[in-house]
Image (cartoon, rainbow over all chains, first blue to last red; front, side, top):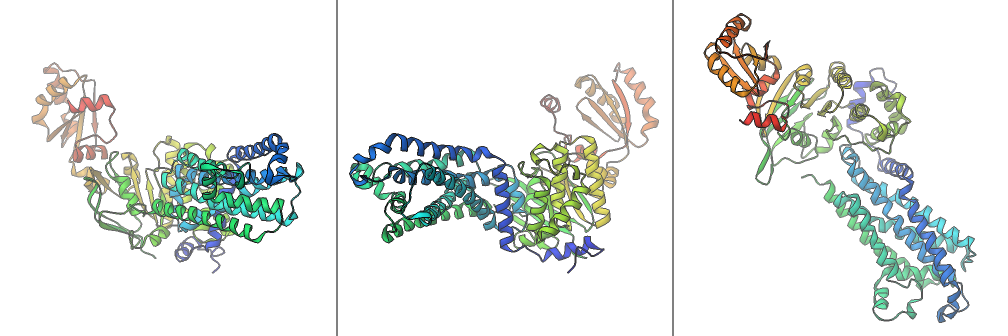
Length: 278
Length: 324
């Protein structure tokens, strides 16, 4: 329509816009981009998660690495490859908080309401933050895997297997970010959102964290069997230690998808509650 | 030209048993600057949040640019620009980034949005500060950026909720000039809430005074002031005792008297001519005024008249005095 070159720009522009609304993908990429730049402008939000994951990896490997020979299921295998998935999962889960923090920040500073006054799609508001969160946690997880490689990790499934581990972590982290986002939308409170992400704690520790499930017993075994993270860890470990085991991978993927779907619905309900006019 | 009216009919917003907005009706004509005045908690911002689609009315309806704020909210958002009292800026972003995103949300391409952003940054005199994070902006700069954001899509109707609250006089005048320009050059209808009577007097074609959720008075500032009748002599005393004595002494010579803290106001038709008599009578009564001024009625007087209180929020001390 050549609005911009028109000399009577002001008026015709206004009337043109009334019928205009940007395509969903444009909105989504704009929302993703803004969440990304603001996240990278607060490195304090990203660095601790990274340090914690790296720290755990080093400490577990250093203190338990030599003990692995005594674990029946692990005899002759690399404990590093066994413990790395724990670090990967905890990095993905803690990285999942990024999206929640991004949303709660815009709610607190009022920018969220400002955006609600534009024709922006509510879904783009939500997904933009989650995709940005996924990018950040993907990078975090890649760094953790990189550390593992530097420590001498030799995955059975090679580079493809590494990709699969990263992919599972991304799926888990992004799904789980729905939980943080849901709390952010419900409470609009940064502290509540922060403490909500501590759910990753029981999820990463009430599972086959240090030894295979077969070596667990009692209540922790029951907890581990109920915890979807267990199946994800098994899938990652099988990729790094054994090879391509279809059934183990399928179970891991399924657990991951189920958890993600649950968390994502939680986020969507939160979005509806937040944007409903009262 | 598109419909740029605002029509509000019997609007009610109820929270529990409290009516924040109680049967409010008014109409704003296309191209008008309409001032919405009221003390804190009078229902101004609630009315604005309903008109701008952020809240739902309990009863009644509002049309903005011909669109119903409840059933046609998306259309309302397209024709209306909004700068809320709580400035919604992201401190970790830069002005150019925020304006570009705002443009993209309203259907512009990234290039168009950037062009528009540059135009607006120029307009609100922020072109030199595009590299600075918004969090480092001063209050005046933040207001200006917020205004620019509200203007990105060239709205036909602009809502400004207390646009100059907390600004220094120079920044306030900048905003006023901008509001006038938008209204004159683009025929933008402007709905403005303010806690500064001076601002409404200066800018608004018509004002409505809202108090306890109800409209207490409405009309052109000049008409409202004229309705109060004549000029007034304002005599300030040391304490309320003296104010009372003076009121008893002088009541019969005025059309109407009003006490406002330590000031006695005498409304009369030819005030200047009456000054000597006032002075003589006060002297005879042994009352010594601190000051004596002669004024035309102001919107402040109108406000005092219709609501029984001063416009600006009294301090605790003053509130007590008033109650006494």
